[in-house]
Image 1: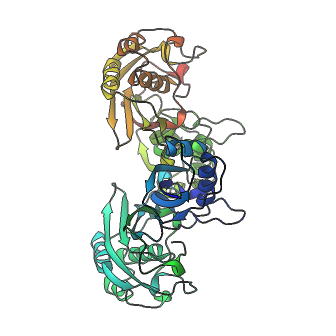
Image 2: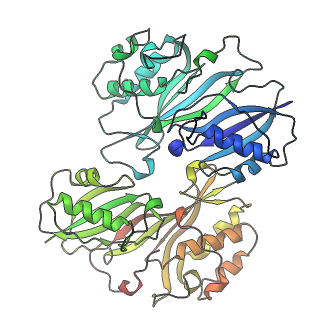
Image 3: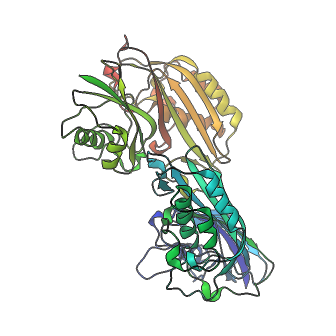
Amino acid sequence: MASWKLTIAYEGTRFAGWARQPGLRTVQEELERAVGRILGGIEVQLTVAGRTDAGVHATGQVASFETDREPPDRFAERINAVLPRDVAVLAAERAPDGFDARRWARRRRYRYRVLTGAIRDPFEERRALWWRYPVERARLDACAEALIGEHDFTAFTPTKTDHVRFNRVVTEARWEEESERVLAFRIEADAFMRNMIRVLVGTMLEVASGRRSVEDFANLLEGAPRERAGETAPAHGLYFEGVAFGDGPLVIDYEAEAAPE
Amino acid sequence: MASWKLTIAYEGTRFAGWARQPGLRTVQEELERAVGRILGGIEVQLTVAGRTDAGVHATGQVASFETDREPPDRFAERINAVLPRDVAVLAAERAPDGFDARRWARRRRYRYRVLTGAIRDPFEERRALWWRYPVERARLDACAEALIGEHDFTAFTPTKTDHVRFNRVVTEARWEEESERVLAFRIEADAFMRNMIRVLVGTMLEVASGRRSVEDFANLLEGAPRERAGETAPAHGLYFEGVAFGDGPLVIDYEAEAAPE
């Protein structure tokens, strides 16, 4: 059996998220159907690096599968020809034997996009959170800085949870000006819990608008209860950007924690 | 009666264009309803600088109207609060008496966005033409250069037409790299005929991919018949970007030519 790696982009608006759910339109189902069809009508099972919730987008998602079929030339283009237009395979490559997009992943990168200012932007409607309140950029930067390192993110995931381990190691966290009106929060960590980035962003924006102090935010990072953190920012500002892989499965397995972000 | 100027953005995907049409969803109807409502339930008639066809977007459209009502504070924000989310008023300002967005317009600016490369981009699905064939950039630049000045654009509008005058003066025309994969064609002229930019782009892309020579394109600009030009590029790559106004109505009136681009 050969292992394959797919790099994938999707506009999440019309998907009920990555993971298959009966009766709902999911990225996983669309892709498994398309890949299976191009391989001659077989069943394909995809494993994904970062499960995403309904409405979340991806620009560099990675999924893997195994097959004994030989894919055709221009494999990615062939898959795209039968995929709906809100999802595309950016690359389809042979991977090392046993490659598994979830277990081999070492770090995941996300971006959260925030449209600022008093006026909506019709082109950002399902692609960024519109935050019309004043934003003090220096306070956002201070929050991002506080995030670097290992922390207990209990405050940033729903109280009812399948997660058994709440520490995560953040290797990058920063806000940047993507354009005149769009601020983007970029974060990289070994793994994320369900809603974690959305609650982080919702809470940081409260700091940015003066409703909460930077110290308060930093104090949440050491295992505070969920009710002390802020609102969950909407899914449609969130983008799965990419994955860094190791050369084998991780010793610490996140299987028990494979809930969608 | 006071004159007002609205600067407007819309994502054209779900509109049947600017101009009111019975039974169809149009930008004009949505805006007239919203503005009339904020002014206390009156009828408002908008005049627009550049009528756009179904699917065409706008980032800097301008419309005008007259009223004896006094608008509320934060007029634009109030209008936006009752508008659907794919259209927004960016600014609402008092204009000189008699201001008319169509008759006072001297130059209109459009942009046409082209996604290049072998792979689709789900985020550009209704926002750029996907052109998967090779593109020789220097040939595009040569076409753009040939466009500057006054030409007879008969070849670039449908044969069945209400237009009575086919000369237009192009004051700017250039291709630029908007991002790694998106090429944008920017054009400014005194006025445009129906489909003119879309046929120009469709024909220039044939030149870029080697199916037609630059000379052939240049020869079309002096009154050649429609059938000698190329395909009409789709509406969803086109954006109305802005208008330059004079300080009064134009002597040459384009009224007889007020068909949508």
